[in-house]
Image: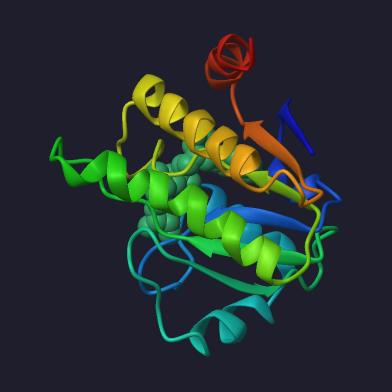
Length: 166
Ligand code: AR6
C-alpha cells in the first residue's frame, strides 16, 4: 500500500477510481464534479441518477465511461458551517470512499480535496482530516493492497499536502 500526492487535473489519471466531490442529488455541478462529468461523457449523468442521490458523508460508485479511470466514486462532503459534525462527515467521506473501493476490488484510488471548493471547508483543516483518515484506513487494512493518491489541483493545496506527507 502507498500514500502519494500529485498536482493536476484528476480527470487525467489512469487509476482504478477517482473520487468526485459531488452533491447529494448526484446531479453534476461546478468544480471537480463538472470537470469529471465533462470528461466522462453523457453516460455518467444517467448512471448517477440511477443511484437515487447520496447522503453527506456517504459514497457511491459508477463506471468512469470516457475517463481514463475505470470508476468514479462519488462522495458528498459537508457544506462547511463550523459545526461539530463537519469534521466527522468529512472523515466519513474518505472512509466510505475507501470502503467502496475495497468492496469493488479496486487497488488505486485518487482523491480530490473534498469540500474545499464551493462547500467552503477551510483547506488546512480539511487536508489534516483527509490525511489522518486515509492513514488510519491504510493502517487498519494492512492486508489490502491499495495505492492512494491525494490530488491537489492548485499549488497552495499541493504545498499543504507536501507538509502533511512529511
Ligand atoms: N481536478 C482536481 N481537483 C479539482 C479539479 C480538477 N479538475 N477542479 C477543481 N478541483 P469543489 P466541494 C478542486 O468545489 O467543495 C460542485 O458543484 C478544487 O480546487 O469541486 O466539495 C458539486 O456538484 C477544490 O480544492 O467541491 C457540489 O455541489 C476541490 O477540487 C459542490 O461543488 C473541491 O472543490 C461540492 O463542493
